[in-house]
Length: 87
Image 1 (spheres, helix red, strand yellow):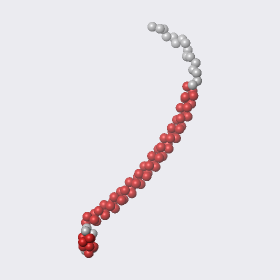
Image 2 (cartoon, rainbow, N blue to C red):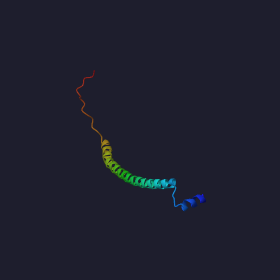
Image 3 (cartoon, helix red, strand yellow):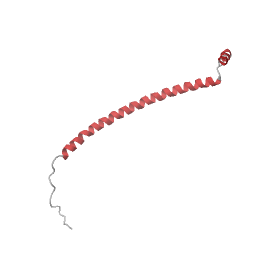
Image 4 (cartoon, helix red, strand yellow):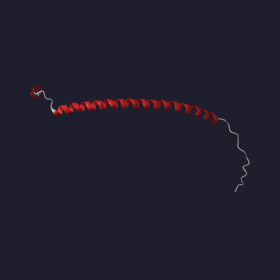
């Protein structure tokens, strides 16, 4: 391995495999950076949606409580004569 490196340095030559791996590494790092930015943006959107859903849930809770309180009111019986003939 050391002999190979010495010969490569002596020739001032970068093997094609190493060069292509370096180029691929650059592309992969750029892609990773882009994906990380997109992930951060998506996490912000999710956080905003969770906040909105929480607020809407809290807004719905008040009418639910009011409805529950209204159901505790004693209802008066409806009209007795419905005009129906049993049959």
